[in-house]
Length: 550
Ligand code: F6P
Image (cartoon, rainbow, N blue to C red; front, side, top):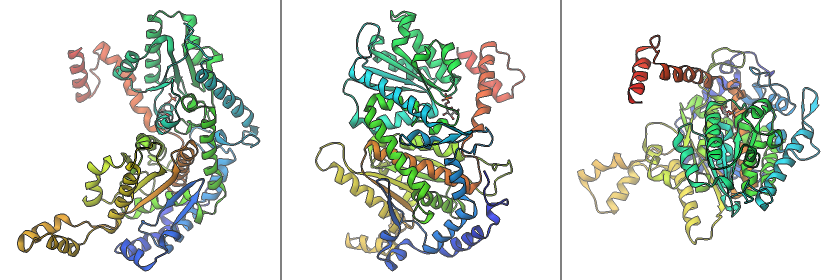
């Protein structure tokens, strides 16, 4: 990708100015910024693709944002974004285009890879996914005994698991009454065994999802599922009614014994962690139906258009990304917390861990030089309000600054009275508490009003002070609908893209997962043979213990 600069981002004028401005702002209190500007919410919030982002509770002023936008321009963000949408092979270490945006584009759109329009193939797979999902849901797709499908078991890992698993949980309110969705990812047989114990082979559909169809965990689980299915009384020919594959590797799918007619394909220009919009989303279509799956795609497309067209100053993914860069670079933020105030979004932090950390957890630039600055922070989180009773203590009074993204649907999917208001009140209260904190004088006044005084009061004061000035974003959506979910995930995808451009890393490869895979392959042999003499003392010792226990 041709970013407009050749030198380290830290040496650019915008970076230098940002560093100076961050130092000048370090002692500025968010309380003060809000006090000075009653319109801060209006000025530092925006709506796009049905989502609202309130970024007013960040330690920035107009000048900081101006400098962040200047940095983005200096890094060639707009040109880089256009290259992604144009199908340029921006994944330079694998020589691949990055076109997940094509997967959610409407009919009639045109996206090219190597001069060829990919949309006819995208539309054809989308159609097959839709038709298959409808057949299973309506019950016209039947198992080998003539029964309709009651259980869908998705076997996949990483991008072939997290997206569909997260989305199916998020959209449970839209789920089909006859279906139960199961997701098996771990090679720890506990997970598959527990699922198999609950399902009936005659009514179970296995979706084997793997971009490469070589991932050892998925292949091991798929082989065990196949053996279990056959052991339950079904014949080889019955596999066609119960096993479908989602992959880019037709040869390996055939080798496994799944008919080409039961394979849903995608392409090498779809990264694993960006693949829930492709046939990898088949479990989502099965669960919520074709129309809802397509509404999710359309919600994502709305965010794509916003990202592609809005000026940086009003561009939600760009703003979210630049704020993250700001804290990482100038406030030593080593992690960000994702706090969905929605139990249905419980898997969203795990999903974002792969999206952000596998994409931008890199320490060399696109041309292989050491990066000049810290890149991706650790991403973690849990739904509120549960997190409040676990780790929020550290967010409020710990030694580190940890920016938080609060995410909440304005309307609930249930009708239980009172719950949703209480949930949202907590969400708003937490971002406010992080922002305003509580001063020693405020603590004293509170304790005095409660009847305390003297040394006992003073001893408690430091424990009850909240520094405040801790930043957060709040992302609101009307309801957790397929459309909102699509827009939300696309927002984070584009945030990751923007940060990759600023940090100058290739967000679309994942070489860092390879070494462990290679060693595991070797060690599995050593566990069997005991021949581990050449290993280091620790590895040898551990292998010995495993062998002794088996
Ligand atoms: O090991 C990492 C990874 O390659 C991810 O990037 C990917 O999402 C996951 O493994 C699964 O890969 P596949 O879909 O090819 O089985």
